[in-house]
Length: 300
Image (cartoon, rainbow, N blue to C red; front, top):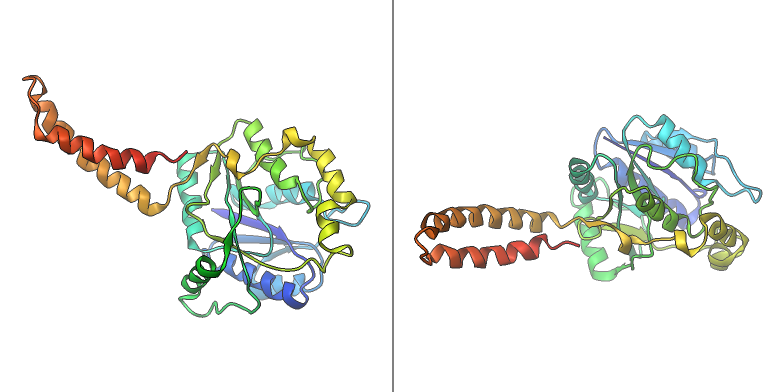
């Protein structure tokens, strides 16, 4: 059902640990998941072989040698064996709530983009994926010690094949490209679903030593400015806050359905006495039940 694609930094030091954590978490989502790792970076081929991933070493680059995002999206959509794809940064850990969210959104929409906020968390060691409770422990750790980022931070993009075509600018992985991806889906009239209330995507904190100019080079360097110009300026930039829909938590959805079922029963009882212009106790029960139902379904 799902093809995840990404590109990595060289597998060295702390970056090696967090990238291996991310890849293993995606692999654990489902036995049939397809994961494509782009790039010939140090350690990429070995990681792909170890975890049973599809490795595509060739990546087109710009004049500074940075990987081009339009090439990754075009190639992934051409070679993926599934109709739903997800580009994700290689430092993000996913858990089963992500897989369930994909299933729910796919059942609602034929074409879509699903995004969500991330949880910044300090992780410096390999996660114990051999243990059944690794995800529960990580979830508790992120909730207790992590920080849920604002809507500007977008690290995964699950979308239906064909949503992004040859008109994608030749962005590199710096800034603004993520905001453009959200704008493009909105401009194309496709639903943009915010899964932040359902999915806990854990971002493993790291430094920027992989770039010669460090954090400044990522956020305000020449390539960052070029990305902004390629995007078309601020009028073509959007965030998770601009989503057209919000995916409610699964528990909230179950409660809403339960209230709805009970409310229908009371409505039938009340309807039987309506012709006699008599206030039936069922009316009061109906009003009480629909209040939490309305609250549960008020998701925008």
